Image 1 (tube, rainbow, N blue to C red):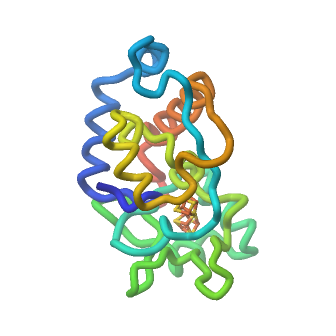
Image 2: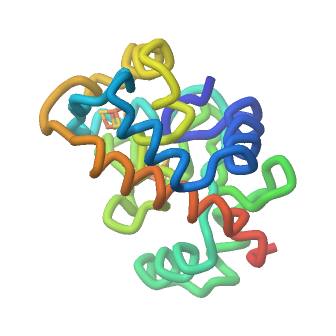
Length: 180
Ligand code: SF4
Ligand code: SF4
């Protein structure tokens, strides 16, 4: 299972597999199904605890546009961003982690993401990933590590679908392969 914002290899393969099997209409059908486990919506409010930015190793993927915006936000060149902050994870560029597992952009003193307003789609769309939404069991598993799930704002299926679509189309562009 992924460590929340971070993708592990199992989740990555699952997401790849899902993209082959599910197109947007099929996802919409699942979410609109009267029997769908989350047909009444799901609550989520990010409490900014940073738990999903730390811990077990994982991948933090990004696309070219996100990469460019992050470089601009940090006020550094794309070359510097690539050299200091990017590594390869399972054949794709990913942001680095520190030896303790923290994402390179996680500021442990302030307990927050240093690039929060421009964080990659992978982080921004959590927990509305196909992998998390596939069943109540999966949602509950992730929720056991994320205090913001089942709290705060109610997201109705149409809005959840927007996130899923965004997540999928982002993932389809193969996570910034051109940054290599
Ligand atoms: S509330 Fe959840 S999504 Fe927000 S930082 Fe904590 S673990 Fe991550
Ligand atoms: S980019 Fe920000 S939100 Fe995403 S894992 Fe790193 S610290 Fe967390």
